[in-house]
Image (cartoon, rainbow, N blue to C red):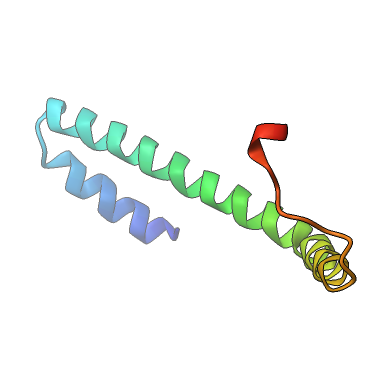
Length: 76
């Protein structure tokens, strides 16, 4: 975020009463934490995507060769 955007947000918040400012801060903290969590998931997925594709191809091959069967949850 640019310094100008941050300054705009600070200026906007400055017009609010303290209780509203605190609510905005709490909302932003939650929102930013959610964004960071999504970013971590995206990075993790990107790192494992090749491996997931390989595993999917292996599973399809095993199914085609008759070396796979449906999962029976009662046997877990």
